[in-house]
Image (tube, rainbow, N blue to C red; front, side, top):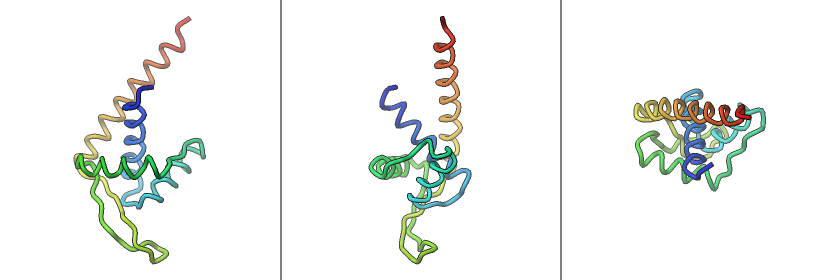
Length: 108
């Protein structure tokens, strides 16, 4: 897969997580992806935080500082209207990618 497709997959996972779970901090996003995938997927901080920054710059998410349940300051992220639109496009693109891969795998 090309790098932009992998990057797009991370965007899809993060946007979907925020759509499902609401406002979360980075570690909460990582935990949700890991749990929701039955521990099959893990997101490294070195990939997540640059992606969050890029998505914030694109207007797909907004961020703000809040206190966590353990009374620590953390940056929380939430989906914007533009992010919901991007999520829909990313889901459609992913479905097309999967359809193409399945077609190749069935070809004999």
